[in-house]
Length: 142
Image 1: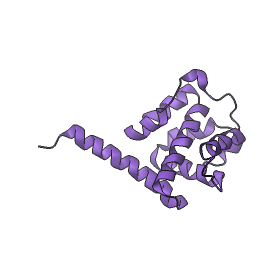
Image 2 (image 1 turned 90 degrees about the vertical axis):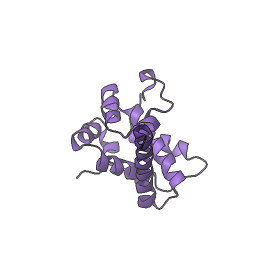
Image 3 (image 1 turned 30 degrees about the horizontal axis):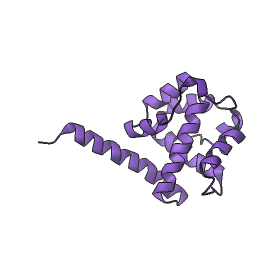
Image 4 (image 1 turned 90 degrees about the horizontal axis):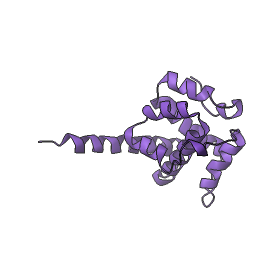
């Protein structure tokens, strides 16, 4: 008899691994570095969104990715006050201070593209619309 809880957990792990692999393949990075990028961009995105958009996006993330998204979250009091593209990019670059990213815009775009492929079109449109134009340009439009 198969334990469905264990099966669901294994499937969630496979799905998270698949997301990391997509980024790794797109950027030609090792999986560990791709995971760090996914985590970094998700955290920055979470803190850049309004509370409503943050919650709406999280509802569409796979369970383990949702856990990464909320990891270390301090609550709504700590949402980013500055929402410029430069601040967003600096935040990602700070997470890679010891392992510099050569093209931060391309790295961020890879994560945005991943979300674009896996999250509903309507939700992605809302997330994209909530961003300032300069940061929104990193998000692909299909």
